[in-house]
Length: 371
Image (cartoon, rainbow, N blue to C red; front, side):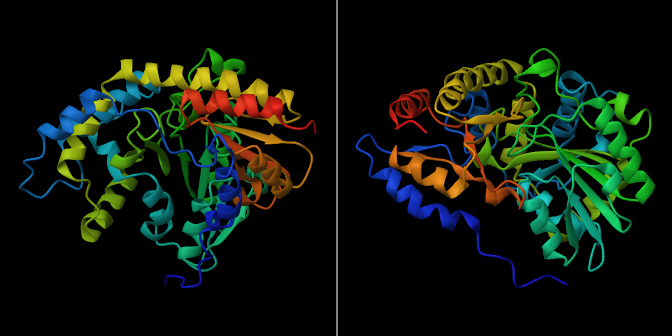
């Protein structure tokens, strides 16, 4: 049974701060939502255009070429070998999968969906849709009996926390003790910045160091929105336990959840295009190198944020007070309250703004009254 009393979309609460920021003489610097601003690679756009004669229904399972491209990408970029096309499935963006996975798995009242304490709100909304109980926790030992689905997110949104192999192993083991499916949302995996992640790839939950040879009830979820600036394409996929993938495929066939054929072709090209991804990662690295020290110099503490697309920051005051002060400088961020009940003094800054807007934010932070 679906739930009719879902909360209002939280971003409506930010509108007054956005309006105040827009009144700044130099215009708004919007660092609130992680929507890419850089161009989609030309090869991807060409592939889309070349595939517009799409007179037949697309395959829900994905074309053989797309599924093989996903398999090859996991082997090349994620240290996950041994997958076959039966292990992977394209999805219409990753948000619909996050929201609907509890539906696909048959969850309902009394079931528990675990998600991170600092979390993208759709994990909890997916639980709410089926009247299951969301359970925010970062400690596998605390996950309760009745847990049917565990969501991890590494690097995390909003906090940029990266989960290492040891933690992922522990999480998978605990999920199996509970008889739960465990899924890792890995869509920021190309964006490792600090500590060991400056030099090492962010590990996938499918990495053999995590699961050994057993993919049972384990899923990796990925999106091309960030690494290839394809947010408008709604291009994503999952990989993992082939029996679970087959089960999800059957539901998706009945529901008509199929990725349009031209987008499947564009995804196939994007997955083979490491050069454009490297260029995009370099752009985000350069923007982060400007914004992070500017925030620290203006009194912010940056927590975690060793990977991903955001800086998770606090100035030791209520987040809405911080939001107001930033808006006076023409800067818009995301309040920590949108990402759970545990971080009322944090705000999230996105790196998805142009070089010029990031540089403008740094100058405004330097010119703002001392805090």
